Length: 428
Length: 167
Image (cartoon, each protein chain N blue to C red):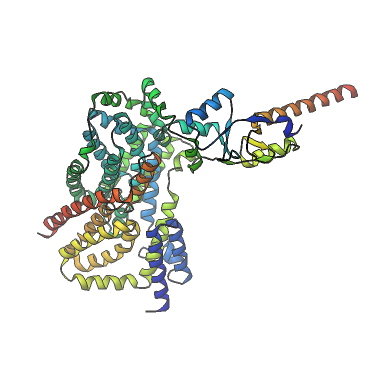
């Protein structure tokens, strides 16, 4: 091992540790790590900006940017609040039914929106509903954030790790729909059952309270109907663009950017509202991560890790899939799943390349493990941290262990459901 | 005109003052903000009336203003039932609320000096003299603006008088 490789590994591991302990903003860590890689000569300008193997993955960056712009404009319409209140009223004010409705809505939204955005949209309206019903807030918030992490697993655009996997593996939106959406639907059914087991005791139906909820006028939440129509048309076109990829040939990032551009033209909002919800820090964090991982690819470190993985796996791809699924869930429970997947993607790509069709399900194992593992602990996913912050601000603090005791049960059960899915669907 | 000519006594609130009490002080005195004192009664910060208004609103409305539309009038009245449970301390601890460090001016400072100090700190209140426990006197933004406009009026009328005498 050369000094350069040793230094690069130290930079990479150090950045990982700093991201995990979360004392310094993760974007700062990722950019400093990337800068260190450039300084030690592990990568260069061509490697950073133009290399498909070791550079910044612009597909991921621009897909995220496009979707952030679309969602940022759409949230000004009030449609998300409308949906949540409409669903709660459909449940006639019965707390557990409302929980199920909100969980389903959250999972559905999360399949198309970033998880953090979804919980930021759903949490305030949940607090209003709980106040109307005098229902306990904590079960609602915990169930919603978990549903968000589960729902995000279903599609290519639902969770950033899926976007990274899609880009690195060359998978389409439809590949995710065919391979992950069915299992996510099954996981949601199981999750609702778990919610009944874990949370039902705290709920009590009070007819007078239910009347207070039924008095809410969800139509008033829609603040800009013409804009809502424009947003729905553009969102429909974008989803069509994703699904019609084999026909149109546009990469998801291009579809999202074209949709964002069209909506910006149609919405005619001021720049502050159009770009105010773009999380520039997240995009830079991704760029920094790609440069760090790309540096290890340049130096041959990822090839060595890939070779070691190949030697370990041999021909046992079912074992590898189950190992990757459970291992990813464990690691993602502790470490941000974005750097984890960014690191594992080149290794998985090596395995899939050498193993052929039998190794292809490893991508789905990686996505399921990394996405669902975020539910296990209070710090497993960014959305968990955001919801815990909201709960604290509103006077309903959720301790690390309160979240984690539910999270561990839910994650263990859901991962256990994924094991037979992988086996039955791909290896029987 | 000096700061001492513009100063008026201001009531002070503490971290334990409730949203209802703070709101009453602002409404009854037609005030633009409040002065927050420490446990010893020494003024240490100011907060604007709109930020006190934030304290009176439920947090879910602050997180999502469109939710205010879905509540009917009868329901809207119910959201005020927790005014006695919210305190000024929450504003002080809230990183999203710009609680201003106290702007201190001297009694003999000119209107320009007072205006510059308030503009620099984006504060609508300035304490006259060093912070001490007990009743304190403050200059508020409307008083400063009134003094500025009056000074300009005097300048215009004297310029007009000068022009008239010259002709």
